[in-house]
Length: 447
Image 1 (cartoon, one colour):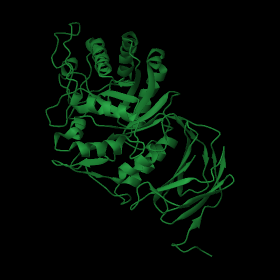
Image 2 (cartoon, rainbow, N blue to C red; image 1 turned 90 degrees about the vertical axis):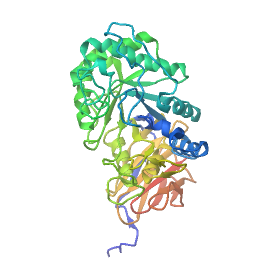
Image 3 (cartoon, rainbow, N blue to C red; image 1 turned 30 degrees about the vertical axis):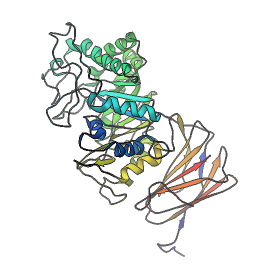
């Protein structure tokens, strides 16, 4: 007899989760507030200190919010559009690549210094600084916008510039743990952008690597933040093929605007999905409206990136911004208010519970309607994330290896709930049974 649509549909077989084994480690989940968005959060358009704290809690608190653990900073570039630029530390051509540079530092950096200090106070330890462009006078097109390439004669000066930026942050008490020299080198933007071919990226790494090592900074290099995960593959292959460049880079970084993370990167290094938000310029607060801008879309993308892409970190693009933003939170413009999207809650359902240095563990999934990932934290807690793609409720049994919990916690995120505690999970010995709401993300935590 066929089940009616309103009835629960059981999975055809038991799913297995092996918490004793491990796949890739998880470095964390993150966001950016580059292009002076940190200044907006600080109140440049009227957000009060009380509301600022609420948004900071949403982004950074492990108890009240998402507990995001990676902050991506934008290294200076200055276009002429309001809130689409970042201050530069080298505004004037010193007179040539070998002339002494005249760096300037305001201790603010478009609000990013303030935000970094706040993040550190919340416990953030990964500060990822990335340059969209070199200063205009170092480039073939004499502009920080519209692509252009780094002039070979300026490679060492550009490497020095990046190191100096990290030293300025060190002066402020913030250690730049991860440093990138290019953002989307495969794409020309009308705002700050700079092109590198894979070979040009390798050639520059041979300069930047020794410069960072000689500086004494405890900073690791990342590369190359290509606009598409598929496009990043050619940069990864070029780095892996060159021993000097390969030694210089600790983490491979790629965006996924041109398509999903449908392959792992060809490397044994750490791999970060370092920027993405749904395409288009739109604010969307819905969970599952079929638009491709909603929370369900983000939850599915995180699952896919961690499983198919084997990523060690997931860094969403914008934490908070104005107007028709693709960000997680929309700030009033002007005013003392903000709104929270379901995209935020999709990311928070992962980042709050899966902490830095966790490991992903193997899952044998018996139900194609369910997308399942599982993790073991360093404190021994275990997390299962289940995205039910079906339009009906599912009931699933899980065979657990590596411990069990008689009182697991369940949380549901869907159109009406946001990481809401729910009595949807029970255990009997090493068998866990979950009742999964349709088109919902269920988070299970076993202590």
